[in-house]
Image (cartoon, rainbow, N blue to C red):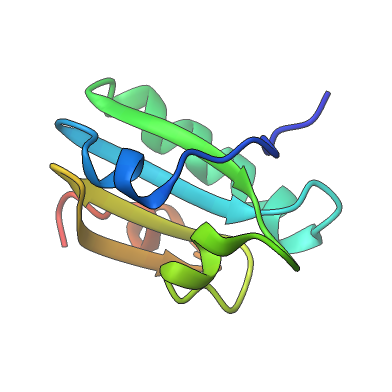
Length: 101
């Protein structure tokens, strides 16, 4: 089963999302993405108010470029559609806890 979805919402749709949304950019074959999955699962389990969108990134994927994604995984926390935090290749749970930083 694929973790990352290939059907992306548009930039306008993402900007209109209410509340908190965690965008995760990566690909299923990325070892860094696979290693971050337990950190992500722990974060989401304790932050039930956060919507999570795992988005496949790469060539031809405009949304990742619009957010300046260069490395995988990149996690971007949106508050009311605006960037409120970012973590790139988090090494531990504290690096991914974007709500406290």
